[in-house]
Structure formats: structure tokens, C-alpha cells
Image (cartoon, rainbow, N blue to C red):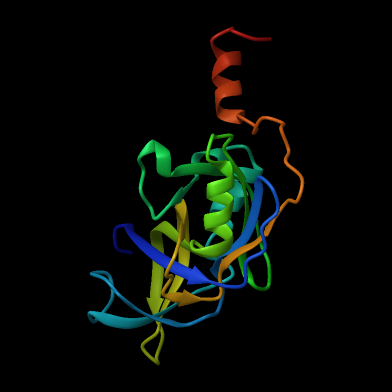
Length: 192
């Protein structure tokens, strides 16, 4: 097995937006795309993700060993604060692929961010660490195990089949959950 490597892939699909909760297929399963990076057998190669690609990460989160809150939601994979628009709150595998939900941050320009998600930044792009792959007989690289690191809304995705599919209609003013921070506060005795 080779060492894990990090890749970035972009996807697109029909987008529906509702309030501060955003939902979308972040990685479609079984969809082949032509990609180019330093990881493939050739500079341009075909790639697909399997339904088991993120199973280990989802199981770790379900068991409490990890958190969705560590997966940021940004614009254009930029990590400066004004491009950090929210965080992942939930994800599940479906027939379509890895479906994730995000909560947008409260911010002065929330209407602008919502407008961008509806009009210009309608695709989703993921940054993932690839833990295991295989090359099929037809030359397609199958991603068998991966770990999602970041998701970004992008204007021009290169990979069909993923994007924002829903955003809640009513604003939800409840604060986003902070399980990692809560665990630290309990550990250090700040709360019971």
C-alpha cells in the first residue's frame, strides 16, 4: 500500500438553497471523470469513487472518534476567514454518493453568500486524503478508501454529479453544535 496522498476534486449538480442549512452530494459514487494530477498512472487519467470510499470516516464519526465539525465549508478552497462560510454538520452515503449537510456561519454578508451559492458557486469541490486505490483492468483508478478534509463551493466544477441540493427556507438562529469544544470544556472542568 502506498502512502496516503491529498487530492482536490470538483463536482456539479442541480442546486437548491434553503436558509443557513446547505445540503449536497459532495462526491458522486460510480461516476467516472477524467482528472489530472500527480497521483495517477498518467498525467490525465479516469477516476471513480466507490460507495465504500468514506465508510471508515463515517463509522469513526458515528463512534465518536471524529467530528464533522472539523470539515470546513469554504468558497474556492481558500482558508482566509472571509471565505470560511460554515462547517459540515452531517453526512451519509446514499445511492447517489456522499451526501453532506452544512450550516452557514452567521455573518454580515450572509445574503451575499446565499446568493453566490444559488447563482455562481453552485458546484462543490472536495479535498480528500486518498488512503487506498486500485487501477482496474480498463485503466480507471478506483478510490476505495478516502478521508474528507474540506468542502468548497466553486463556480466551475470539473466533475459532474455533485453540488448543493438544498438549503433550508427559514433562518435557523440556533448555534451550530460544537462537540469537540464541548469535550475540551468538560475535560478541563469548565462545565459539568
